[in-house]
Image (tube, rainbow, N blue to C red; front, side, top):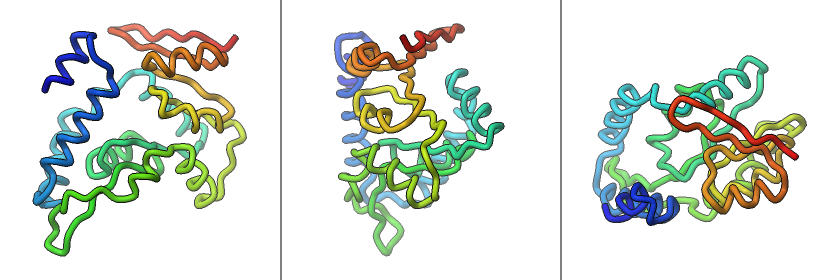
Length: 190
C-alpha cells in the first residue's frame, strides 16, 4: 500500500495512512461474514495481544486498580478493536460500526459515521449514559482529532502524538508521553 510505505518512509502522514487503511477495510469488508471477521479478529488478538505500548498497558492497569471507568473511543472497526480493548481491561468501547445484513454479512455501509468522528460528543454521551463525571478524569490521544475530547478531561495527555497534536499540546501545556524502543519519557505540563 502506497500510503503505508510513504508513512513508514517518513514522507507521508499518519492520517493519510490510516485513512487508506479504513478505505481498504471498507472496500474489502462488503459481503464478508461477520462471524468470520470475529473469528479472524480473535486469532489476531490472541497473536498480537502483548504488542501494546508499555505506557498504555501500565496506565490501564493503574486506572483499573484505582477503580476508574475506562473508555476507549476509536476509529478502528468495532469487531476488531472492541474485543482487543476489553481484553486489555477497558469497560466500554466506542468504535467504527458497519451494517450487517439479515444474512450475517457486511453490506459495506458504515453506521453512525458522524458520531464516531466526534470523540467529544461520544465522551459526553458516555458520561451521561453511565452516570459518570469527569472529576479526576484522564484522557490520552494521539492525533489532532482527539483535541476536542482532551479539552473535556481534567488530565489530558498526548501519547506518541502526530505533529498537529504535539504542537497543540505544547502550546497549551498538556503532558506529552513518547515511547520509543525501550524507553518511555514524558514532557510534563508547564
